[in-house]
Length: 194
Image (cartoon, rainbow, N blue to C red; front, side):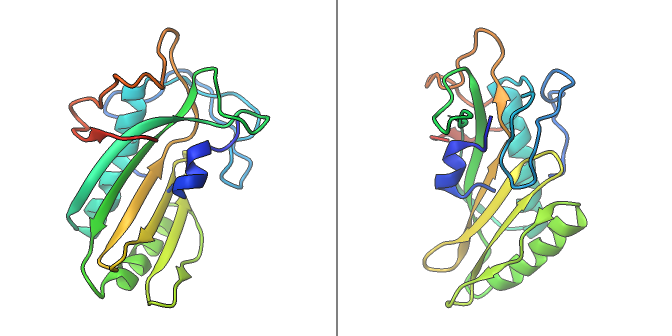
């Protein structure tokens, strides 16, 4: 499988372990170093398991910044298949999206702090891309393959934070794109498109 398809659109963006025990199986997703998932074994995880994993990682970033959150959503989206199309075989990723309100004039400081935090946690962290308005963007990938992106809002008082899981295979009998799914209670967020 390749990088999650919607991550391209969303510019997708770890620390905690899953309260539910995490994905099943012993296989690790194969990463090619560019943030895309190369051909290889894909772990099996239910949507609930994947939702808890991305929620925990997003909560860790928000906790580090000690900032309020607005408009949190979480939901699955199909990964790309090796040919570049959307997966139709139950391979998906989970995406958490929210606005983290750090306040006017505080985005640059928050980016610098997060860059240090990600680097200290062993993430593959890109340099901050500074924008003309004094804000910037930041992207990182944690050792487990979760991708983080922070993009400034307009007006620049908050970041749009995206946390995307690696690709997972849905358990047999589970359609990851079934629109009736809702996040588990420990997540408590609304669903949104991946």
